[in-house]
Length: 193
Length: 330
Image 1 (cartoon, chains in turn purple, orange):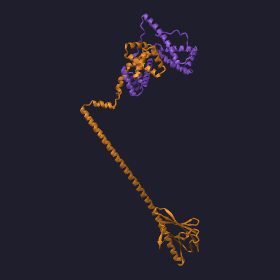
Image 2: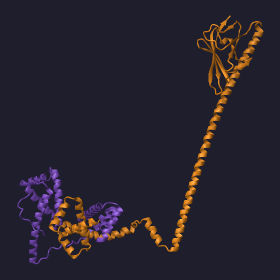
Image 3: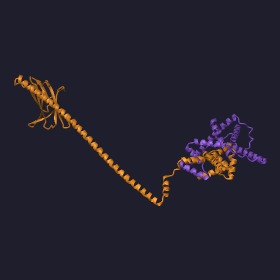
Image 4: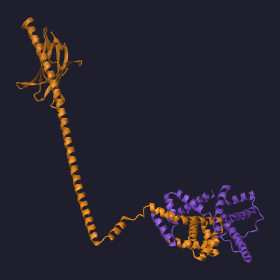
């Protein structure tokens, strides 16, 4: 769905250029590697938030462009900010490409791609039940209660949870997020078996 | 919570692509420098996904959501998970309700609710019963405290009696021991007296049978206090041939008031040659003295020291005096 940015694809990332990039990101290769992973995660989120279809590919492309700049002798003072600058330029290219594709498809009489859920719902539910059973009763109760109810009701449920558990809002939110991620990972692993 | 909500609404608008480029950049920059904010964005994302799968969004929101959220495979998986969780949650909610006890309510709320459900007569009866319970409880507490106090006093008295009994038992025991000691001394004294009497009787018989009446068998000496060891006028006991007994008359000061007396006779070198205890002083014409009879074999020619000790009521002794004399043979 995303338009493919072609202008920068001639340059390819070599091992030497990648090593230079890692050193540019941190004091040494190890700390550079850690920084690389952190920035890549942020870039992926950024492209996801902006509605891109392949956030991880775009994050890698951002690093390619960054590595090229480093190989050309560019000095990077703020790696996260620098990466975000490149990512925003890349996003513009993607959006332009998407517009072109959309126009072409409309002219051809095609509707935009519509997401359709795969029909393995029963398997998914079975796996999720199994994963929920694997949680402790407290955790199971927490995640079910945290995400239970419509907008207003949900807020009240969370207030009650906060009062009952006696923990700060952010702690509760973090616990719910982690449990949700754990459950989702568990369900996907179960489905892939 | 209000501030968070406002912030969450802004984040939701960002995620649906409703904000200007400038605002989007602002949110993204903050998200990548503030981990807590990043967590909030993820939480809002989940809530949006849940609203979508529960069909709680308006048409325009759904369109925006679909164009943004269903684009990437990773997000589609999240939507699928949310759909499954939404579908399955009611099953667990029902199951939890059937096994888990209801949400805890404070006792005050329960009591209030209970009272509100009663009619006026029942309310009056409940109040009366409660009053009785309170008064009865207070009476019981008072009684318990009074009984406890009495028990403490009785325990203290009992302890005191036990202490007194122990003290008396100790005193009786001491008296018994003292009595036994005195009896033993008395027996010893009796034995010695009997031996002395027997010796005297034998000597008298011997004297009557073998010795002419003119020859004395008893040598006697009176010892006066105040004569020192080196004095030139020390009294002399002369042991003539045939003398079997020695009679010593030890004079003491009239003021020496003791329960009894003890005597030790030692040579000049300090060797004890004779001793006697439980002796009593006798008064005759205003003078007090202690009379002793000892075998003549107990003393040999030489210098002697006789020490006299007084014994008080408690058994303690005190030196009364020292007497010096010489023994010579003739």
